[in-house]
Image (cartoon, rainbow over all chains, first blue to last red; front, side, top):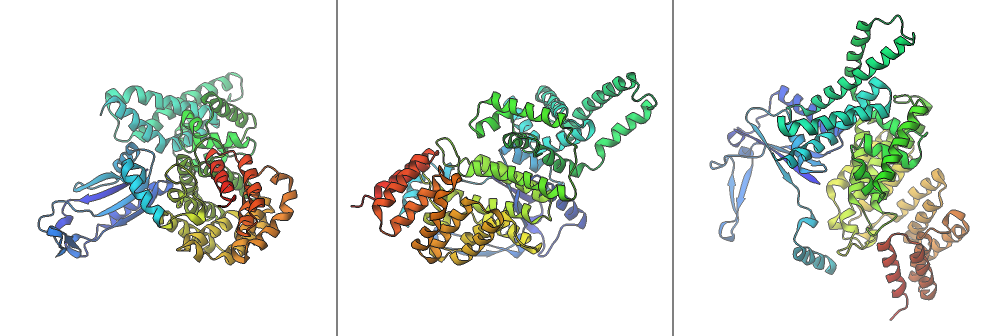
Length: 133
Length: 418
């Protein structure tokens, strides 16, 4: 099963454009990433620039509206993610526990949806649609 | 956390840590069987204590320390026995103990690799290598392995016990082989991993066409190996091959569990993360230089499919060229059969059919269902429906996978025409 480990660093919602973690934090994180790789569970990972460099698109009333970052209302934002392939939610949590996170950091563990997770009627709908192609 | 939650958490920790723990213990006691027993005892202790006391902050270190203490006890007992027999008459006990403590810390990074090489040692039968590798390196329980191979649990348990005994009797050293030995032993490791993958990818027995869990186990083993041996083109080739094949898993099973063949698959359902990983691993293998080995060549063929946006954009001429190399390396009739399919795609069904003629007399192909299956397919394309039907029926008769058999029978029926 695939899980996303979403890194949520407190304070990143107001971080200035181009802000980077300290070399020590990067070194510790690289060591952790290597342990994920050596365990054969790491599929992909990326760090994200702060929201002050991003934008949000909302769809209120069916109309897209673009808001440039930073976003005053945002309390938590994602700073990066790992995609891992493990046997259970417990294993994903155990890997998250091992991350050398700082005081301000939090990891949210979320399972990636698979075709088989959808209810049977939705699956049939998608299959029928695929059959037409 | 409820007791069920703790149990699941411990299982997860075990899956992550077992190879490192067993590896460290084998390095101490030089006996895979004894090491695994001690590691299992540590696991049982954790199962007893952690639901009450809570899971320690560093559960891996706790398990390792507990197992290590058992190993030290065992070595002391052995030392005592040997001293009594006079073998170690002048060994100072203090020096002896210090030596034990240092032994656990040195060179930990290679323990997992050594363990892989021991578990895949050629002194063991293929079945034993597979079971032992999944158990020692994959961290699977005996029950999980039994389920994966549709075998009774006692059979697998016995297989593992015997394998451990064989290793002890043969005095297989706990080391990563060097020199010419290394390539040969690495080939055995790759073979075991690919066997596990293939058993999951196209189940030889049973009602399911695929067993994705087993593919996942093989991929994990392959990725571990590639992280430990980053500079071997065949290791990278095998990983690339498995990533590329696994990328199609979702698209190769229909809604009723029936197989969907490569050219009929909806390519939008292929897993592009795995394709990217597969292509990257293949790039690294090619960048190492030299001519490609069998796994990297097969990965290169897989890459041709992965790069084609639709089936009719496939570079069949390149695939034929890659199969030429593979035939030369392996001389395998199965590879010749696949090459014939590629030739038929590149140069027409008649050209492919011609290549099948010599294969019909191959003894190893007599009961191989894919030969009549391919023949039937090519005859159908040539409009020779009666002959095609007979071939497809024969293929269905030989197929051992139920889902595959059903597919072949359906195609045979379609040959009867309107």
